[in-house]
Length: 88
Image 1 (cartoon, rainbow, N blue to C red):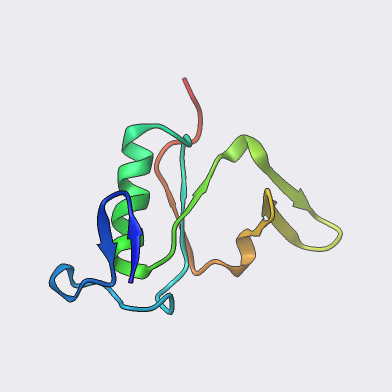
Image 2 (image 1 turned 90 degrees about the vertical axis):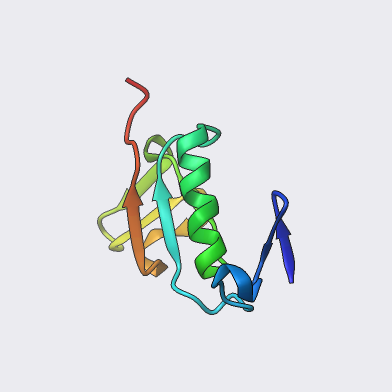
């Protein structure tokens, strides 16, 4: 079992999975913003994965057909939830 901000991931009482085999879902939002972090935490509790993606850091390579955020290949995720795209 792993710990995430005081919440045990994989706790059967929370209805979460005990391993990191759940769907890989990223949250597009503002890293550090309470609502983005709360949504990412809730998704992590249910899936075992946590990815926060800031749109301004996303790079698309159209020749290769890839989209990355830092070292994360967004094409390898099962879904993206758009929380907030910009600061304004």
